[in-house]
Image (cartoon, rainbow, N blue to C red; front, side):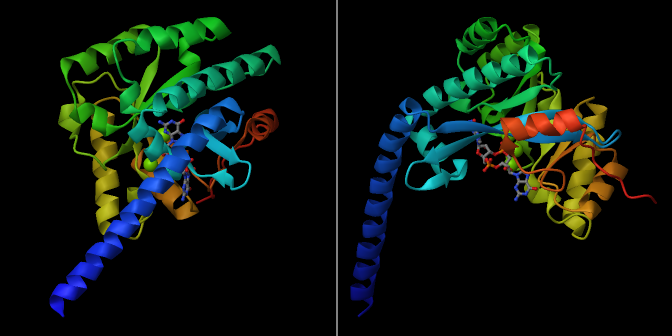
Length: 284
Ligand code: C2E
Ligand code: MG
Ligand code: MG
Ligand code: MG
């Protein structure tokens, strides 16, 4: 009986794996189409200053408008793109589109804060600085108008080569932010080796603020040490006024999250800038 159940379990899993593989293949081929058919779009989520309450940046987040399935989340297709290498084409599209948008805003006489673009570790090769320089040049966008978000996986791979590429980007005038900080393996001491100017505290540590003692301790430690390294701190995924108050008290610099705004299409982000939308701080 035991043997039989092991066998059926095995069959069950292999069937599931088969389905997963098919799903991956489908997403991969549809994603190629999406690049050709203009189904991709960038949404922008504001980053606001915890001092002034003003919008001081935005993160560009990829969206896929599938003709049948509607809006597909990056959580579904980015991992497939990473696995298949298609992330290189997606990443190139994102950089191009972000620069095109920044230029369009400037041509409309809008003053826009820096726009951050997410980079996959796979994009991080010796040619990256040249590729980025070419895109900036093509759209006549200044390097400080585009920030780059990278993840800890890149640091863990942390060879001298990676550091050299980062230094090259910084020398060009770009700034680097470390995304999802705290979820990987890098310690703050280790961070000193890399020319990173901003740390983004991962949403998973923000969720429990200010009630979960562990999350509070982690947030406090990250902010304190980052201040010593003179890095800017952005808290991700801030949804409540209590979370905001706690982070502000800690001395966190910026907040990004649904409390202020979800990621929105370019026109909506531009409208927020025009209206001077600001974060309201409760009077205490
Ligand atoms: P991320 O870079 O950490 O982006 C932040 C994610 O948190 C976004 O999810 C954003 O919508 C979500 N978020 C922001 N504030 C809140 C909040 O208050 N509550 C909740 N529940 N969520 C919030 P999104 O847009 O689904 O993107 C997921 C991930 O996909 C990103 O995480 C990033 O790793 C990846 N991604 C998105 N666009 C790109 C891209 O252009 N290139 C690459 N390589 N990865 C991308
Ligand atoms: Mg990011
Ligand atoms: Mg993040
Ligand atoms: Mg995150």
